[in-house]
Image 1 (cartoon, one colour):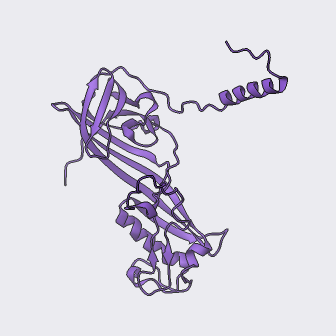
Image 2 (cartoon, one colour; image 1 turned 120 degrees about the horizontal axis):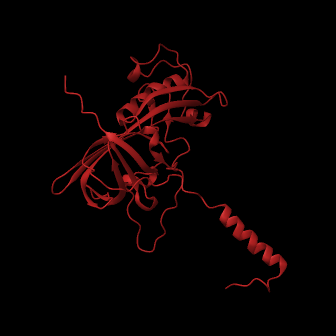
Image 3 (cartoon, one colour; image 1 turned 60 degrees about the vertical axis):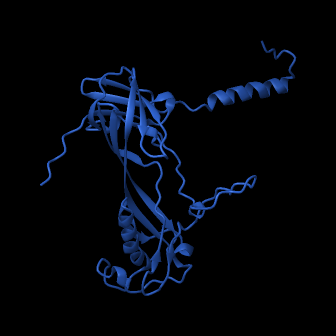
Length: 284
């Protein structure tokens, strides 16, 4: 047993204060674990009307550091490159050239909601599963005056010939010149849509651009059951096995990541409540 009888009053106050602070700063679990009764997991499942019953944790997901992509590995004992925000302007380059006036930017998102989830578990040997998850959200670029004009871009030009059919008749503000280029870049990426750019009221030389996210992730693999625990073995070398607890009661399937882990190893996703998925519509 530890005794504080011989501690000076000042030191004792510091010790007690530290213990109180450490107890008061502990982070409670945001998502409680759902049921773990097991049952028959086979079938096709989705959110249905239960989308509000999934539980997620907000995470800071920094954008990829593009300067480190495909970088050669570090030599032995050499320090690793320090992490840093890759570019204040999100790799945006805007010029006054007649063609290819806009280059970039790099679209990013963080803490996107899991707006749709469909999981299908099949029996057999080996038992297999398929997963489709769609993350959704609305995000913004805030391009400062420096970001917009550092490469010679100016207001009052006609539309970039590349986007003449989708742009209003000129002369155009710089934000109007930027919008169709971002719209095309987002559509080509396949996940970013409905781009709208307006003048930044707090920085009139800059632009604020809004865009919607629809990021579709698919996954397939095999699974093993052990009581009320299911272990997923996703296909692909970059995916590791992950475990979940489940409980099927009637037409409801509850799934939770084990020991506070992320469900399906998807960042922020802790638990879901699923119902039998509707049969897909026949092709026209």
